Image (spheres, rainbow over the protein chains, first blue to last red):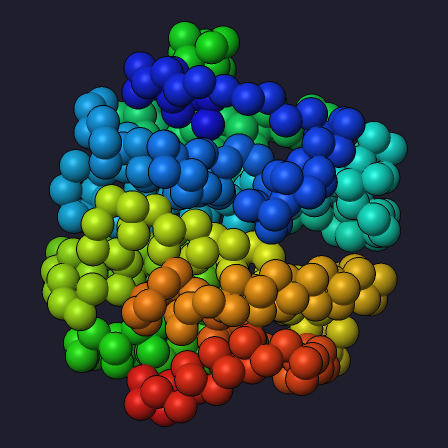
Length: 189
Length: 189
C-alpha cells in the first residue's frame, strides 16, 4: 500500500494501527471492519474499504496516472493474472511458512502448525522458480513496465527473510528483478 | 467460471482438462501455463490467460452487460473488497480444510497436514459468521444486486460439504443467501 501510494504520488492522511497492541481488535475498529485487517481506507462519508488491492484499484480510478493496473483490456488481464499468481503461488506460501514457524506470530496465528509451515517451503521455492523463468525475457513480471503485480512480488520476496527461506542465488532473473524493485525510490518511501 | 459465463450469457468453446488423469501436468499444457491451474483462456493469437478472476475481468470488458464487477468507482471497490474477503476468509479456509482432510486430495495436496485442515474449521466458521452479519441488511454480499463476489461465495459454501463443515443453521442470512444463489439458473448451467 505504502509502495503503491509512493508510485502513484498520492498522499493520504494515515492513522497507524498497532497490531502488536492488538489495536485492530478494538471494538470501534472491528465494528466497521469485521475481519480486522489493515490497511483500510475511510472515505469522507464514513465508508470503509479494506483489502489492499481493492484500495489500490479505487485510487487507480481516481488517479489514473501512472497506470499500474494495465492500460488495455489484454494488459489488464495479464496484470491481474500475475497479481493473482504472485499472491497465491508466491506470497501465500512464503507468508504461511513465516506465520507457522516464527515465534513472534504465535499469537496472531493460533494454532501455529509447524508441519504446515514446513510444507510451504517447497511451494515457495517452486513459485520462485516459475517466476524466475517467466522473467527470463522481460524486465517486469507482467511485461516491460512496472505494475501493481511487481509490488506484490517485492512484498512476497521481502517476506522470505523473516520466513527464513533463502532465495536461491542461481535464480538470476528473480534476483535481478528483486534488486530492481527493492532499489526503486518507492521501496524506501 | 461456468457460473460467471452463464450469468454473462457468454459461450466459449471448451476443452476439458481431466485433473484426475493429471492432464494439467502434461508438458504441452504446463509449458504454456506453468502453475498448471485451470481454467485457462486461450486467445486467438495463442496468449493464455489463467486465474479465474483474470479471465472473468477480461470477459467483463468485452461484454460489459450484465455488469458483474461494479458500475461505479465505489461499487467496483466494494465488489473487489468482498471478492477478496470471500476468497481469503471464506473460500481459502474451507478449501484448506477440504484439501488437508479428504483422502481424495492426498495426491494433489502432498503432504496433507491434518492439523492444518483442523485449524481451518474455526477460521471457516468465523468467516461464515461475519458474512452472515454483513448480509443482515442486504440481499447480495456487495449490495442490492448480484455480482462476481456472490459467485465466489457460492463456490466457497458449496465446498463446505466435501470439507465436512456444517453451515450453522442459525446463520439465517447466510443460509438465505446460499439458497438464493444456488437456485439461480446459472448454478445449474
